[in-house]
Structures are given as C-alpha cells and as structure tokens.
Image 1 (spheres, rainbow, N blue to C red):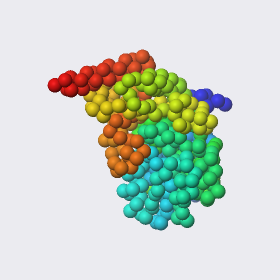
Image 2: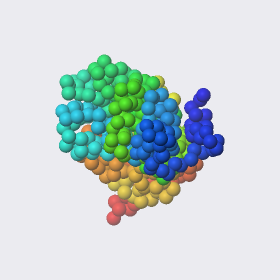
Image 3: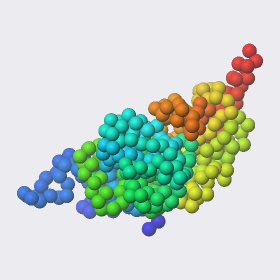
Image 4: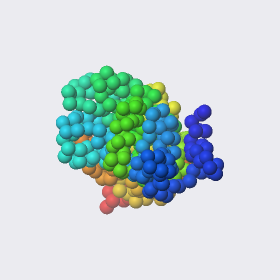
Length: 389
C-alpha cells in the first residue's frame, strides 16, 4: 500500500468493537485485570495506552522500524534516546545543529559525563579523526536546521555500523513521507512531531522509532522508566494531523521551492539555503535519498540592518518560533532557536546576524511572495530614509 493511503488510514481499522474510523481517546490511567496473573495488555497508561499504541505502531510502520515510542515533546524523545549512554561515553554530532539539542547535550548530558564532538557528518575523514574508543553513536540532522546541510545517510550509517556505533537520525524536517533513514541503515529515528507530523501548531509531541529487537527493548525500558510519554488526547491529535501529512508536505514543498527561487534572484538577498535548488551543495545527495524536499529553508540578507524591519513588517507570515505548521512562520535563529549555541560556533557554520529561517506554510504562494516583497520594500525604504538623515 502506498504511503499516502497508509497515512490517511491511521487508526481507522484498529477499533474492533464499534468500527470507529477515528480511533477513540482512551482517557484512562488504569485498566482492570481479568483475574490474578492476567492482563488485557494494558495495565498502567505510562507503560501502554490504547490510543498511544496505535500512534506508535503507525510511526514504526511508516519509518520501516520495529518499535515506536511517543513522547511528550521532541526534547523528551531526545532525552529518552540519550539515556542509552553512560558516563564516559562520547557522541559524534552534526555540526549545524538545532540549539535545543546542543543545549541538552552540553548543559545536561555533560553533567552525567557524556561528551560530544560536533563535525560535518558528511565528512568521513572528520568522523574518522574524531572517533575514539569512547564513541558510542553518531547523531545526524539531515537536512540540518537552519542551514539545510545534507548528510549521505547510507554512507554514514554503513560507516557507523562498521565502527559498532549507533546511528541516530533526526527526521523532523522531511518526515517518513519524504525520507526513511532506517531503510538507509539508521538504527534510531527521532522526530519533533510538533512540527510537520502534527502540522497545525497545536500539539507538542516527540516520536522515536527503533530497528532491532535489543535496541527496541532497551528503548521500551527507558520510555517507561523515564515516563515522558505522550498523553491520549495529544496522541489522537497527532494521528489526526498525520492523516493529511502527504498533501501538506506536497504543498509545503511547492511553496518553499517557488519562494526560494524568487529570493535567489532578489537584489537584497545574499544567499538561499534550500536543497531543492540545484546550486545547493547537497542537492544531488538529497535527490538520491529522499523523494522530495521539506517546507523550510533559510536565507541571508545582504545587510543585517534589514532584519528587524523585515520582521516588523511581515503580516501574513508570523514572526514566531517553531516550524512545520500550515501557517507560515519566520524565525531569527541567532537570537531565538540557536541562542544557546556559542557565537563562535554559530558563526563558524554561518548562523549569523543576517540569517532568517522561513517555515513556509500552505497559504497561496503568491500571497506569501507579496508579503515578503512588501516587507523587504518597507525595510529598504526605512534604511534609505535613515541614511538620508
């Protein structure tokens, strides 16, 4: 069955009693035992809940994994994964990294003796040079947030296997509709499901998918023990959002590509970071391992003084954090999503004071371009007026 059909049918054939096509919300924390020593399969909701179980089975199947785990946020999902590691363990991590992941590693995991080295995960020589006897895993974002750097997943996951490392891939930006890292050799896939999977800026969630019996059992133990699980209501909301993932991602990609191409030619824009563009250094790898492109990209203005007035003048596009919803959002990474990353590291990879990140929604593309153009013109006029004074 094609993935579009599998998405649309999430939870629709799982309720055996009533045949409800929308799986019910089981708002229960405890479940009766038929008798001593027997269980319905559900005992306590932290361990297992019927609504959450349908969601977890769906994401495992969509990602070609063996087990799925729904968490209370994307960061809770990452914390659960990182609990696999112990004092003295070392991680190799994508250089251009979401600020929240960097914060979790450097300010929390470091307290427990887990260290990390940040490298270009598409550079085998760099990975080899920084891999030590203590290295246990490679953590990959592809595309990265916000500079859209691409990692050759098959190449790096195969390298990790030869080294005995766990390969962890953040698939938030592409979702299983466009990219399935486990099919390319990854051991663990993680999502901030708040983003494209939920898709409506109304549910906070994280998802983990594992491949292999031993790793799945370890993750099940950590998921239950840590307890940062997704509640039944949000599990249902997430399933409802995922039903329309295919058509949303198609529209996100169409709009983002049109706007990126427009900005590439704009005289006030210095550069555009989007893998769909042939000029992007990861374009060919992206096309090889994914069936399409995400709806988010970043761009740099030629003059940093344009940033504040642009963010003040956009109207249809909201100046707000997060990404992946039907509404278009624009973010200033240097002071928002990546503020926890030291300036020298940010600027090394290109997250400077001229960079804006654009999560393109599903509005009409002409309206979005018009909103951008108007904001650019207003910002430019303000600078010229200020210079004339």
